[in-house]
Amino acid sequence: MIPAFLTTLFFSVSAVAATQTAVRMGSNAANFWRLALATALLAVYAHSVGVGIQGPGFWYFFLSGVVGFGIGDIALFQALPRIGSRLCVLLTQCLAAPFAALIEWLWMNETMTQTEIISATTILAGVGLAVAPSPSDLPGATKPHGNSSWTPTFWIGIAFGVLAGLGQGGGAVLSRQAYSLGDAQNFTINGLNAGYQRILGGVLVSGIGFWIAHRYSRFRGYSKHNEANASQQLQDDWKARVPTWAFVWINCLAGPIIGIACYQWALATTKTGIVLSIVALTPLTVIPFSRWMEGERPTRRSLIGGVIAVIGVAILTLV
Image (cartoon, rainbow, N blue to C red; front, side, top):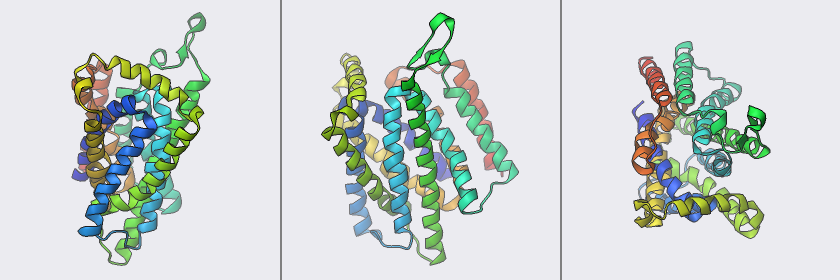
């Protein structure tokens, strides 16, 4: 369980730093450069201390990166400017667990015990209660004649958010399959090296997306407008004096390197559905970081949801 909890902590730090880089550099650039830097650092480690790209599970790790880092993260950054960060994180983190469990059931014929299902459901319910906004708070929501009406832009964002959750869940299952192949052949690979093999697929897809976004401006117009407004709001804030690349490095280290290393470590020892349920606590653990960096105060509902989620985690650790 410890690797999964460490993953949650580092993912929270990465999420706060990612917000800063996205509003300054643009979503596609921020996503690509964090992966590019992480790939370079992990390559030095993997080809000097680790096993590089060797191992029977390499192509599964690579495909895991294509699905999770690549398709999943591109969808995530497309969803952010349309539905906002709270709902986007909610969809990605909470849908990843059931998607992964469903894929494992259909593909690997592995099911969770009744107690594990109850505790995982409790965690997801608590996270959902804590971070789900009311319909009137959602970007793109209007109230003609006192009724809420969600625009097509909102539903496009929802679709991208669901795709991001599917990408994360599918990527996690592929990683676990890679570990299974290694175990069958008595081949051991640690989290950092596995993260390197995985990120190779992600940086490839992210690079293609980055190139398309700059080659065809219509793919970046919507987010550029929102990012420009957000950047203007930062001008009078102390964070504006922190170099942009400092946040890029924080995002790089806390997410694709240390965070993913802990993530791969957790997947190697624990069922995917359980790992993703614990990682789903990220929207809650990010609260103190966002309170410090962004001045956001947690609501009573978010605190109640946090208590429910913690109860779920406590049950899970006793299984």
